Image (cartoon, one colour):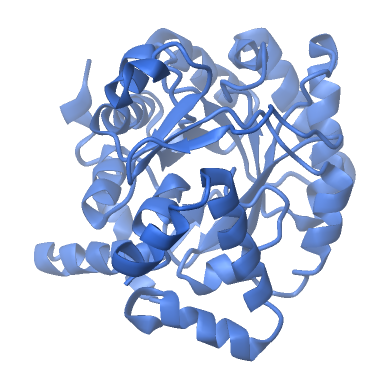
Length: 370
């Protein structure tokens, strides 16, 4: 019904308006237990799919299944419970910034095909104080929440560690894990913070902020898909040096050749590509496999990039990802996407005699060797 009826109607709006309508509709559904039950009508098979074989332990965080709503979908923390009722196990809110920021001028989000997007949103955020106020409304909901931490455009880069730590301190009561975003292509100079010195300083500061609030929670660092393997090895080194939980691989791709596949006008446009693009999916899967080969079970991996079906989910898991994040696929595939993927994974496990999802993690990592 989504692809045949709802998507053609919503496609008449510009992409960001489409997204705002979807998010606020989920927020509206949270007004009562009855409306949340009605929301499940839009989930796969009109119910929230659950199966204990899909359970995941991510750095000590127990998740009902491997699917997480990735950062960027719910930047302000307004639809957490609604997204959970659609079948996701967790919502990563943000990226959350220290101060309110409007982001880049509109239009800034474009669906270049039914399943792929280019965006230059530029960390539009209401700021950490308002996000904290929103998330306070989910206290006691039981829904796991991740917090992606970003950096304001005009922040002093030499003091970036202090900005990231300030957000971690403010959001600590609401976070089940944190993800340090140093890889968005839409904030000038941000990706330079993936380096060993800057990245290490940020991770140390966030860890210290958590310790000051009561103890460390799982912490991840999110990398760019264009990062060469040698530089990924540097990220792995600082991740291990600072005893963080793992790596999110990866962000949107600012690759001219990839963007030009959707029209020459996009080749040199700013912004990153995400979603259902085979080359982008392979880039990110190769990163997942490389991290798994280098670090094994010393680091947890969240796989992001082109996951929109049980087949593409299994590719990432077999490459080494323990959990997966979806953003663009929610627009491309609709509200049933989480249930469809989880159901398909269970069907595969049954057909192959696999008892736990962990048995599949990394089994194909060698196939993606460079």
